[in-house]
Length: 193
Image (tube, rainbow, N blue to C red; front, top):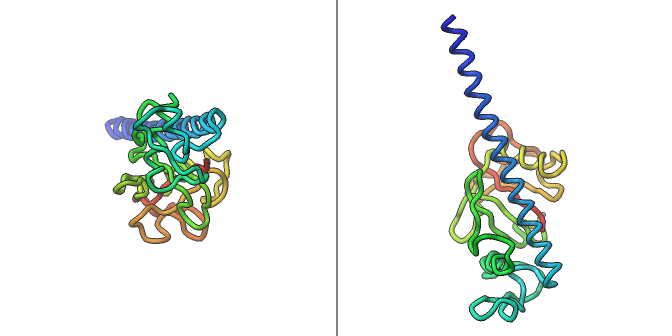
């Protein structure tokens, strides 16, 4: 009888952990989508990308830095990105927001040669950027599948996954598949803007 009760309690604990992980994934996907919609609204309203907007100072006043207007969010423009969205009323802070899964969101242009363009990135804080390994391959796969309508290839679609900085090649992705044998943080997730 005691063993049966212990088994029921252990099963409930494991199920509870799965439910918590699933809730974090849903909240993180919601944040990704909210920030992408904020960028789309900004582009539609002002005809420029937040961070790259070279008219930001005239729109929002002195002290609001502008970008160079070249269509790429690079250098200091990555910090301006959040300032512009904040001044436009699209986000609640002018700093990079944290994620329910840990780490923080940042924006990057061309993070790898396979990923051209501008991307919203979720990773562990690593100096000025958030490109450190944050998620296990299993967590990254869950985000990818739920956010990219079932697409399981890590390097295709609007959500993409790659190794975080400081992680050996193959720890997150091996042979274009998630390395599910690794249970340590190794991945970052990107959403194309």
